[in-house]
Image (cartoon, rainbow, N blue to C red; front, side, top):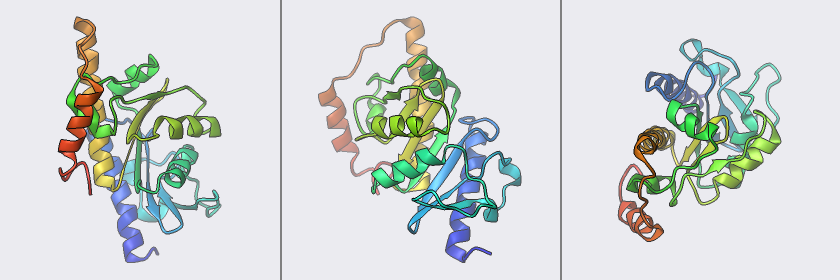
Length: 216
């Protein structure tokens, strides 16, 4: 049986998975979530319905990829491991397939600075990483590059990733990315939307620095 702190972290992952589906930013078991834990991470198991998931089913994995062979981690474990290894500022990762963000990802489109809240993802765009087969090292490498100096990215023909210093903040950002994707998609039905300058996005980031949902 996991220790109390361990079990609380595992339960928080399950709660976030269920909330992800309730919010409509994911469907079925297609998404996955991880939390930094000790010298490795806790990550959702593969192909397990969220409503039936138990804390002991959450997989602990060392950063060398080793784990209990009786527990099968998400097929996207490489993305989670590699982001956590590359980004000491990140403690939680949410990977999901929200409808509007995924539509843009299918088209290979990034989210430009059409709204000031794009700044919440760390820059003046939310990049779209090139396509690679799910679960591969190639896809993980693309994701890590797309997340350089960013907190979110899209994955071409796939979905999106949001990261943060806590699971609640990563979840908040995942929802915000889907909102931005929906807004951008709606604007495109009218025409090419005007964009905010990089200087203005930088100004917004500075003004947001004290907001509780952006920084610890």
